Length: 454
Image 1 (cartoon, rainbow, N blue to C red):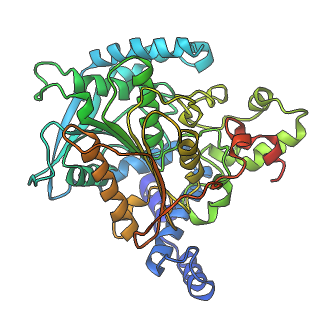
Image 2 (cartoon, rainbow, N blue to C red; image 1 turned 90 degrees about the vertical axis):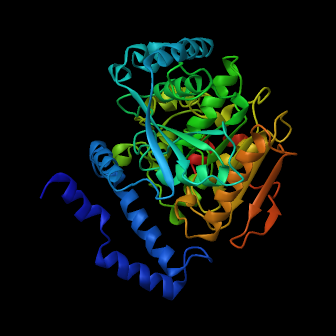
Image 3 (cartoon, one colour; image 1 turned 60 degrees about the horizontal axis):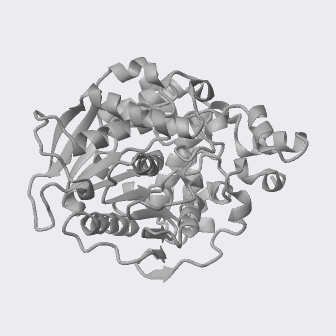
């Protein structure tokens, strides 16, 4: 049996004991969340089982599995998809801006731990895919464009695994979607993904004469992504703003990963109701919060820098020194002046919930509009479960936002922070949704005070 087949047999196909245990638990004690059906309980159990193996198997094995999924992700029958390549001279243009931004932050190649300007993988084509609906309805507007950045922890997935998202945003946003295959870690860590995303943005607003499309008005572009792609979306927006480039019409983050310091309580509180690995993405779980707690307790004082030096690598995306950089953890940005309208959507049952709430609360008085939607009972990037009413609702909210913030749209009237029930009812987000967040933010695991409780 080859490696891929072995992986599928052992870690993807549901096992009898898992099905039996989930069935007994669901009908004896009830589902993990009130709205979860038996079907969804099974789906989550399988997803959790798969995610739990991230710490047990070599990273390359999971990357191979992700590439295998490319073959299982056809273009939707209602869509037209075409390949695209961002010419490498756009990487050259973007590199000038990235270099300036890193220099301003005091970050050089030594701090990064690699020579990002001479990445051999940057010599390969920067591939992308255009997606549009075959039939255009009244919601479609020529020139309206979504730059989609896929999720996958910065080290997994591709434009093909996320064709479901591209199709839905083309359909509901009345737009063409440009989905980008940015470079992945750990082979190409930070700032490679930001570099590629910025290159794609420059390509869209200033294409070469033979690109096959006219220059796109930045205000007719929405940048969006899920999970790590959501975090990359926020980082790209900040990079565009800080570089003095024209900003897009808006951005959307679905369950955006914007706090790589893992500082918020939902990272621990929601492990039973999410499918992200409880021990983090680092192979072997060496940098899990529990291990951080042991190291923190054994360390004297409250020195963040010293603690980060003692920890093994926390993330594949970058080294521990840079976890507090705003282009790595955008939740740490303090000023949204000059930014575009922002929408964040997260599930109340997911591990990354609190960072979306904290970002929104931090910028409640910002000069740009921030819209937050927290969906009851929902896990990470629940939009992928298209049969769920909440998924359909969140997809429509995203489409409405795209049409509102782009050219000819009605705009976003004001900030709004809402919880949305499984039947679509809205209610205001409570004021103290994340207690003590100001003590936690910017500190690995929330800081020794909270790590000590583990």
